[in-house]
Length: 381
Image 1 (cartoon, one colour):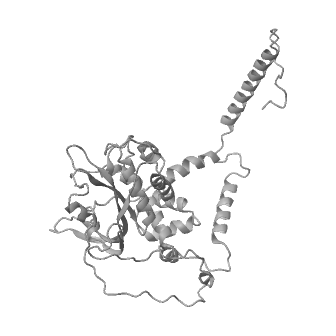
Image 2 (cartoon, one colour):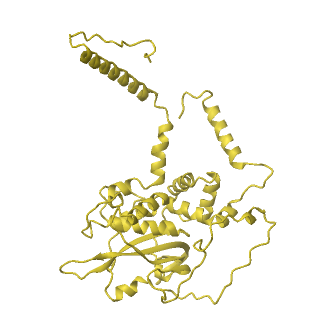
């Protein structure tokens, strides 16, 4: 807190009013509603939910509005709210193989069981500003998309085709209870992949994107293929007393990415592809892809590879990926450091005097080491 600010609590209250005034903007224009943010800025809402570790589009939209569009601040607000919620039950592990698909593509097979579904995507847009969107509703509404016969049949993972031939490493559930980073902070080095994936899932999207990009540019010896990217709704199920079968309590939208990476093998094991995995709340394709690249890079030790890039350094990657932690530590520099800075200045003045004395001795070795630049009133604090 700025204890030296004139006005104290009154000044802070006024700062809050200024913030609310700035957030509201032009009073002649209608205020944006959280329903509009949820429905029309869904990608921003999905990013906030992922980095806050809480799936609630309504509250994420509220946080986005309260934060004036600052996604890091909004994730902070939503994660802080999350800490106030009781944990009522543990759900069963979700099954993304039974996902009700909105989008599903693969870069390794042209024809896949269940077909490729483009869904809503910016992949084929021209990246030209659409000035019709500035018409404030006066422009004609876009034509509705064509809807064919919808097939809700579950589509198994495409990587199972590789798994069937033994061409890719097989992943199995050992039944152990994963460490929960929302309850306890993890200890470094983080060796369990499940813990790393939790930390990557709530990491900043831009941070993961940069690290994933670095692996493609040669800092990590990573040559991936997008095995499958799927976006859709999955059911959340609970095991309840007096019910023989699990009970569905709702659905959440997820984005899942599985990367197929370079071979590995040994004298006892035939070469095979390896995997990288990414999962994010909502429609969050870029985050899931970047996460899968970084996940694979962090597996270098497990797969016997030499760590040569920053993305393969587990402590570096995992300790700096949380946008809320990073924002807090950087922002703390705004707090008063008067005493620390005065001490730094005093040290700097002493070092300068000693430096000047050494230079004087070099010029005049006769032994006159009197301080040629004694402290003046200007140097005094």
